Length: 203
Image 1 (tube, rainbow, N blue to C red):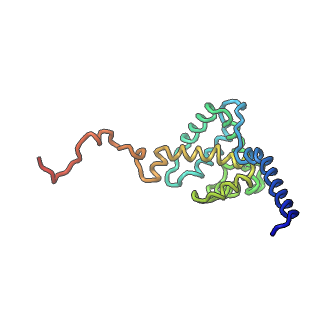
Image 2: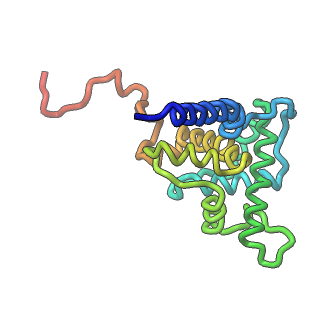
Image 3: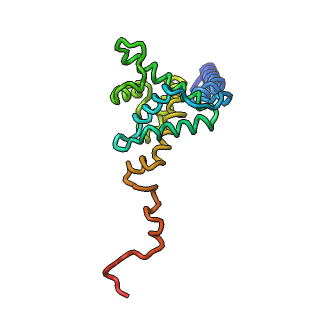
């Protein structure tokens, strides 16, 4: 049977842990869910930063169906000119990619931007920054949010995930899964209004 002293010590420990978790909750929430700076003005990404974001887009889409540069440029311009906070996040993302590129592949250059790297080097930069895990893994994404920097987490949440979603809503993404048009939509809109041809059927 547990003594009264041990019981009180155990209760105090649990209480202290609960209090610490309660106090840390706002910090953890902020750490795991970075916020957009909506006070930052709308605008257009500088050309050099745009080149880096286009290179990022090319690195994360399916290699057998890579869209033209304009696909990425038009998307980014639409976002940064219509949604407050995103211009700052794109600028931060380009800075993060470039700092990591320089650290990994300095090669005596004063500058070594992400856009100047080979596809294999770009992939190495992303592997250095981000964790890789399957869609069924529920723990790794939570741990990543606690372990990586705020800008790294924002890169995934505000830049990469929306861009991947935009890609798979486009004809380039549809092609990856074998569709020539949007899934569920016939190539010929009139196809559902006519009877299927069947030479074996006679009137």
